Amino acid sequence: MILLPLHSFTQDTSLKKIFPIKDGKVYYETAFLLEIPNDTLFARVKKWITAQKGYQNDLYFTRIYNLKTSIEQQYVKCRISFSQPFSSNNKQKADLKELRYLYTLRVYINNLHKIQIIIDNVCLTGNLADIGVSLNKSMKDTIYVEDYQIVQNSLPNPSQQRTAVYNNYKKADGYLKNKTKEIIAAIYNKPYSVEPETTYSQKN
Image (cartoon, rainbow, N blue to C red; front, side, top):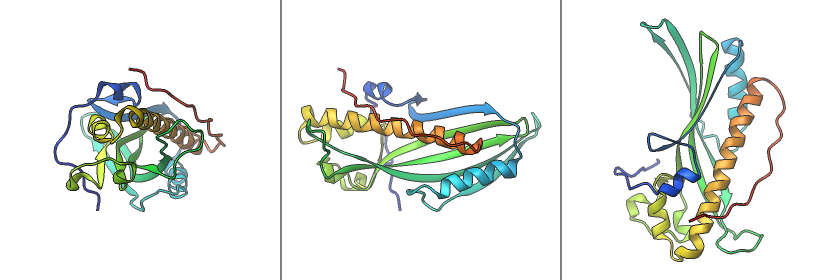
């Protein structure tokens, strides 16, 4: 079971330099028009989802009909996890630690041929203690990435590890952007090459 904190924390303004933010939350959204049969779209999306190593086996499908606009919308929803190596030093080789992330993916299509891909509810999950983050026991399992300041303030070596967390978040952002492009390529049934990682430094 995933335990999320029942209260929120002040969002560090630096977070806006890392992730796309909507209404105070990390939120990726891509929309485009494509005339494709719904069954074909969802078959391609499902194939992509189930091929992901971190897929949580919780694929959910639903249909919505808006009586006012006469727009019918269908979507699939699931959760997927991934990891990013965590290094608290300046060496090229990462420490034998990692930050594990979990995100929610939704793919929508309506009867006007509009497709939306949304990634949100991005969390750090499971192993915060491994990187020296000291939090209340009720918060150790999962914490939203929006609680950036809490993670930063909990690190045992703030000056060095703050940059490490920042860099890890930037890598996670790059990973999620690449995954969005992968899904689009899967929908179009075309190959996609992952873009190389970029190293970032925190700017005060």
